Amino acid sequence: MKSLLPFLLYLALLISPSQTRAQKATKATSVSNAAAQPAPKPLFSDPIYDGVADPVIIWNKQMRKWWMFYTNRRATDTTATGVTWVHGTRIGIAESGDGGTTWRYRDTANIAYRPNPGYTHWAPDIVQDKGMYHMFLTYVPGTFTDWNHPRVIVQLSSTDLLNWKYVQTLPLVTDKVIDASVFKLPDGTWRLWYNNERDHKSIYYTDSPDLRHWTDRGQALNERGEGPKVFHWHEQYWMIIDQWKGMAVYHSTDLLHWQPQPERLLELPGQGRDDQAIGGHCDVVVSNGRAFLFYFTHPGRSKANPAPANSIAAKRSVIQVTELEFNDGRLICDRDKPTFVQLAKPK
Image (cartoon, rainbow, N blue to C red; front, side, top):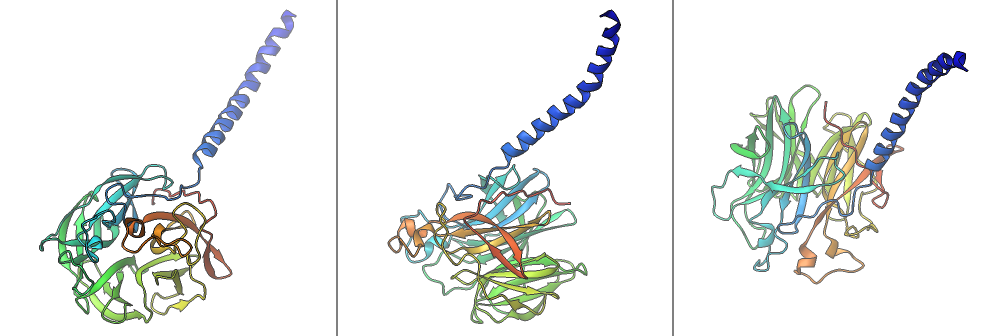
């Protein structure tokens, strides 16, 4: 028996490391599976006015979290008349520490551009370049009861994503423009698409070599729609616009000539909570080869069970998310399919 002890000890030492590795692997798999929960429906509701819309998602490198900026519509303002509830708005911020699966309200962006009483901030887009964040924000000079007023796109800068300084008002072709979408071109220059409300709400664009000097190039897309979103995926460029009856999709190889696909996204109602209405004004985040579409809905405007006009239920809006799929050259999505959001830290 004594002669067997050295051999048994040796055998135990030989086996235990592999068992430890197996136990660690099992534990890691268990943790990974536990974290891989589908995104809730809705993904996010604004706790201030219950009117979140027009989301844009960006990595906050200082906080090491994903931040969502959005138009904070005042859906629960019972004193609102006409469309004042979508004016006088601020830009809300939500944050996610788990790769975009869950979000919590963080703050309101401190935007130091308020030259008019009752100023309105709408639909930002944000890019990061050379250590600086740049926001392109729709600015309306007041809180109005109708839509018949000018709006411009202003450029702001920030080092922390929270405090923003005015840089300039972009020199665009008219005084009634909304919904910037900014994209870095392959040659290192920049292009911004926007909605020209004075030209049948078609999509225009402007170019810049340095995010400072801009030259308007005119019409990019002769289609009615707003909230353009441009991104690169599956070796081509895509533009998604909100046509108020679902999201129209276009693709391009050169960012100048755009071909439509027949089907719209998010036109048919979903079955999830607060997801029975059409999807509107989206952002798309491409991460590790996957593409996630963040959009907003008005739950009270479902065709099957519409809320009374001008009620809080008809005004409130929420953010939802779904994953895009590339199928036979087209973009599709299934808003009822569980969405496992995994946004990785940008390289």
